[in-house]
Length: 164
Image (cartoon, rainbow, N blue to C red; front, side, top):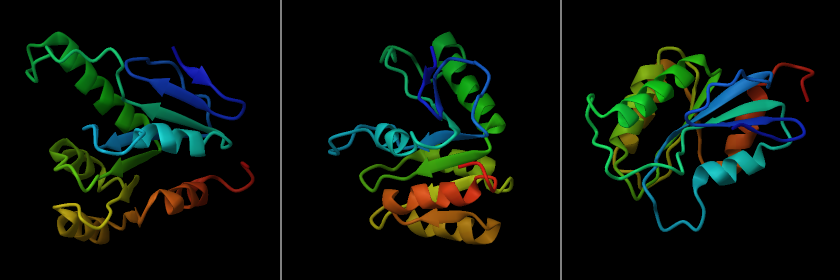
């Protein structure tokens, strides 16, 4: 069920409701739990609450560790296909590479959306493959936000004039 805030909408997996915001943002990137006190998606979503956006969050509170990462595992397949569909529909794909993780799927997600130029990347110092990420971003003209403080500013710059 989508959660709606005064000026934005949050869609959680596996919901397929229509987007209400003037732009949609898919939150790709690190899903592995880290030492951070809160999930980065939760923190970013709260910081965007005052913007007329649809935030698409692939986090699943009902994720079951018995789901095999295999095409024949129906719940796993449903999740991956949902993520691919939502990334294609989104105007922006935010990809976060946490330094404490290797994030191989996040690298795949970056590769899938690099040519479309709709990714905004957060890749802090210390991420193992940071050089690769920087080169891809430079080659395809993708913006890199140095941290979450600058990420909101980069997103706001992408909003249509007069939408705030």
